[in-house]
Length: 193
Image (tube, rainbow, N blue to C red):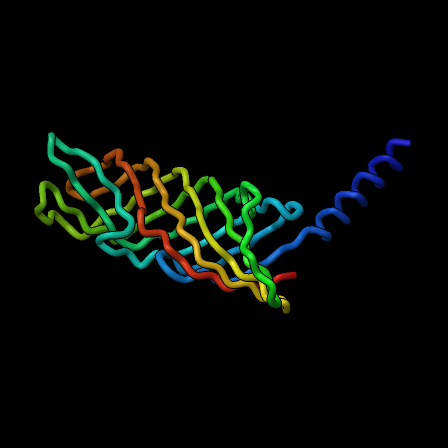
């Protein structure tokens, strides 16, 4: 009896996993990388992203304090993020009478990553171009997507990240810091299956 029950649960889970809408594609913008979406019915989805940031002064950075002086570090980093997104929250939808569908979504989640080749400034003065850091934090997401009548989906979203991390800042030694990425604007194209 246990084997039959286990087989039935496994078969049901397989059918449910196959029946959910999914999409995979590329993400370009603040983080370039890949994006995977797995839907849970028509009202929510899980989105997982792996990306690379080329490092810019205004985008992502670690911030901390050393002997009363604020330091900043920025550079290249890789990041893995996952968000749980609500599709058309509050029942608000786009009025659209043509082929395809518009949707908007809001979500929350977590992200973590590793950065290197950091540029460090203490009290406004450059102190070096070396350093590595790791971080973990929370993310938010707000976006809009268009689902074509064929298996293509285009979206644009804003996903800021706030978190904490550790930095090996060369001459400064190992420091605790605050990570943030406030730009987080990206365009995605995905294949739906």
